[in-house]
Length: 344
Image (cartoon, rainbow, N blue to C red; front, side):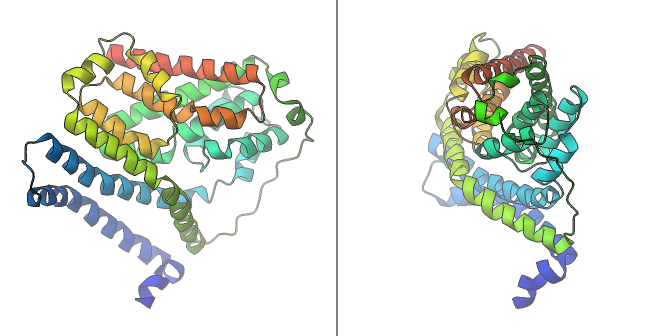
């Protein structure tokens, strides 16, 4: 046992190979295990309750397993992308190229809405242009590794790729628009008066063992924080899967309901959750006949335009800039929803 516990420190490559095999075998066993458990319960196999229970028993360990795996891997990757290094990469970049780079970095950096204020302040102090900063702040929570991996695991490559392309497009265009509007004067006065600092590269001395430990730390921090949201999301998804008629969901969020996309965005903004918590609900909505564009718009609004994030950003932004930010991003999300409902 002690030898196994020492593997991450002394033989990190052996540990990673062993962990990958164990993860894969466990993942493959989830579906038959959930089905067998439901068969043992005193439930009619074709009942609504049996369907909801099987959905929960399968999705809960599946999503948590996917989440743990991707957070572990990306925790190691993220050890290469510290906040300081990100500022160095973005400082002094021109609009356009800078927006693309910032949104792309948002995919692989471990920042969420809760870290928006210190991250925003650090970017402003390092001289990163406002529009480029917003491209990063939009992409980091919305188009992150957790969302993409869970979408890929639950829906396949096509949906994950669509979400990646759409999310990056919203982040790039919204940041570019805000940058072109020259709204620096709508930063809070104390933010405008902060002294500027020079972003300097930090020498990387981490070993593979250190990066494995960084992966463990990410799992403890992120999975330990979001697992209640995941279980609540899966429970809601299970109830939708088991009890909501397909015709009802199709009429409410189907492609033929012209008002479904703005309704999805309006419902999504006040919600406070993350990608891991919302994706099980998205899975159930799609299975019940909701249109892909509507569901993606709902998911994006929950992650990128949550009311709690607006409250946090109010510490550094004046109301006019917050309203502009919400309007620009919401317009992009609405366009995404309508376009994909029209073409798919």
